[in-house]
Image (tube, rainbow, N blue to C red; front, side):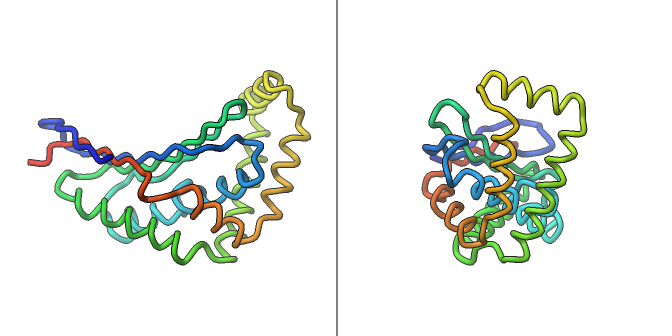
Length: 187
């Protein structure tokens, strides 16, 4: 489903893509999909930012995110971009091209290796924050998890191969299932 929403007299336009799929955060492929999302659009160094923001200069705010539930079998992947309305076609084309390139060519061993290190640094930094640590402990208490779960996730993340990361991306991020919604004044 694609949809366009008119927002008259707004200076910027917004593109949002979303797909839902069957997954829980304790599924074996979850760490690979987390890493694939990070590489595709989950960081400032990700492919979406490098293409849409840096190379094409079309958006200061673009990326993707992944949300996978710990209790229910519900996963959601989304992408977004904020841009000038006259750049709509170029932004959508860049998104589709990068999505197809990631699915066709995958992520390299070097990209996967760098992303693992960056993600581990982010995880360690979040544990150094009282707020981040308290939030994680509260969530884990509710889920009846200990920090052993986190340690195992990180062990699984660090053991991932590029083939596993690429396979998860291809399996779960399907262009035919992504709903695109754009909002803006496209006159």
